[in-house]
Image (tube, rainbow, N blue to C red):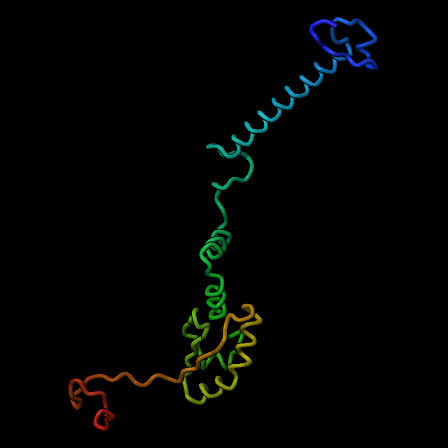
Length: 184
């Protein structure tokens, strides 16, 4: 054999001319080379398409730079910043009459939500309504947690009506705290 090439005894090349590979072997090698070249061209074209999609131009398909609806942008901002619970509680404050009923909502108003302690502060316009709401608090906490998710509100802190604003007048000494300041 020429050039030290070994040809298996049962192959088609061994049966033909002994100087080199036969036509069938050459065809197989050429076919394999053509397939690899086509695959390389296809990969290059695919990479070119991907570079175009993520490149500087915007095309007919959706892109990260395309404008989005206001609601979707706000929802994305809320989830990115971790504001889900405070936003949900804010929604509850807006829907307070539907949650507690019109009668209770007419006399009790949610003021603020403490996110760390998960306590909702509610102000009532009279001590009678404050007492009534304290009795309803466990039921309201359960209803709010159904709406917001388990553990969003641990307790409701009910506050009665605020005292009157003390103003300075002709019969009040500057720095006094009213009629109770003489009793310690």
